[in-house]
Length: 142
Image 1 (cartoon, helix red, strand yellow):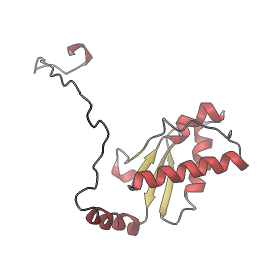
Image 2 (image 1 turned 135 degrees about the vertical axis):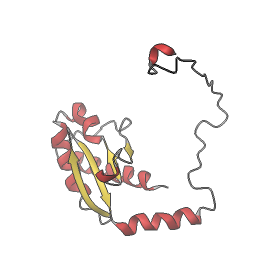
Image 3 (image 1 turned 90 degrees about the vertical axis):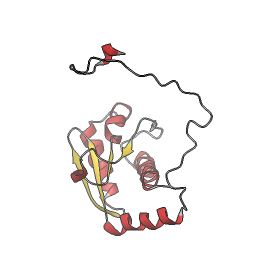
């Protein structure tokens, strides 16, 4: 399990617990939630759009959802800092020892770290686009 899967589980647990005692409905669809590195490394180690995805289902403003989730994330021992950015993105900074422990996990995986069976035995079609090199590439070239 990688660090993103760990925090995906933590987010699921947080939403479930907030649904039991708080303002959220009990059954929320989390399938469109992303947990990934932020585009800008200065925003932390992990970023999620969970508040934006849940806004319609929870009938709440994304920023309000983000504030609730961020408060719960801040209680996790491995989390250094949680920031809510823009309309409701949540940026998580992890403690240094958490990041360092991942290096040990990678080394123990004996070259298997990052391997995936996604798409195994599936055929794909790769197409190349021939475009004018002097102009910008856009969807019309496809």
